[in-house]
Image 1 (cartoon, rainbow, N blue to C red):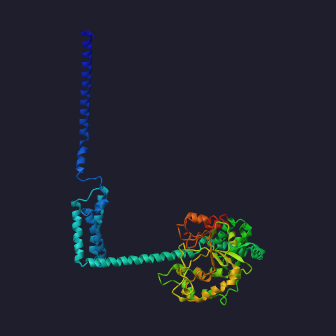
Image 2: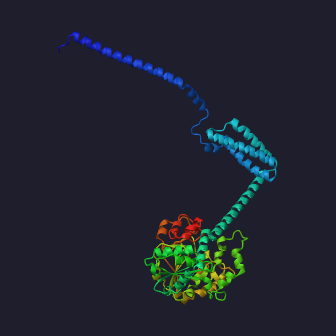
Image 3: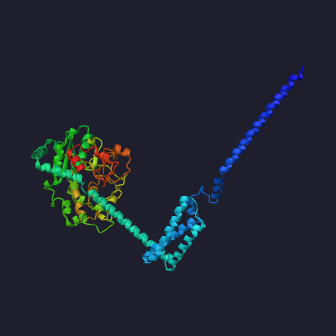
Length: 533
């Protein structure tokens, strides 16, 4: 192979060596510059670095004060334990009128609390120098308290007495709260009272209203068994209106519905005025005054005699001396004869064959006319059973320690609900149900079988005469239970606000109140004026 001439090889070597030396020089300069910059940076951050070294003597990060106060080796735990004991001695010292000792202990307790708060805020443990004077001072005061015969046994007995006193106050507060809740449920809201007064004034001041009421009273539709008859016994015109409005709004043929309303003498005028002035989609309405039922007297009805008894009235209207007595059993509403009219339906409507009874605290969500075609299999009462809910069985309502009850009834028999009931009045008359009711009322003259009300005597009267209905016909609990499944409410034909939290009261459960309010006529001037005022 031919070699190149020397003059061609030497320049190449010289050029290559120049590149090497140039790169080495650049690297040297760059290293020098970085060294100088790094050295100056270390000079600038040296003071913080020294501070961080000092802080490492008291570790800041990762300090959990909760763990610190629970640690058996920490000063925070020692101070906390001494504070607990000192608080007990403060109470004992005050009871023994040793106010100076109580003051000294309280002062030390405040100092301990202040130190613990500071330690928690700065996220540093309490040091020996900080804890020593407080521990020493508290120990001295605790020893002084023990020397004054405030020993452990005395402390335990004192604390027990305080716990018992607190429990008694808590029980008394619970009873008082229940009583106030019951009182709020019984009172008529001022807006309803306002509307009652205005409607009653219109009734007495407008003779045209009374003429219209007389014409409706003689309507042949009220005795036509080809129509669907509903009865409501109430003194609350707004609640009754909501029941009727919801019923006709969900009915396929509202003009075939007939509503039979019975109220008392005080509410009669407001009821008549309201239902004359408002339209219910052509449904027939009959309103009667219970005070005109001359046949419902003491000689015929045992319950009338009982309700007029002074001892019974004193029981319901008087103050209870027993704090454990259930306030709901002392509700004066049980003295209202309207509450017991459900046992006299065949006497009130002798021409009718079948009716649906509705309470005034329900809302109808589906067409109820199919109830009239249900086969009750010869029974008198069609009702939804409540065994699966919180309303229990017969033994929850009746006194089974009495042989009259225990010999004739099964304590595990399934209870059922009033509020939406189908009554076959032909079967009622055959079974002589009203006389059965009178029998049990006479047996309970001393209130030994049950507290006055309508469900317990209803369970006895309709025992063996009740046909269970699908529970979707009647869902209860909207007046006390805040956790009813929405799907159950949506599927229900009737929802019942049984309980103290009625939808027209301020203490109503907000979740269920709109279901009732949608059927209230908010456009009526009296509703607007009285609510605003």
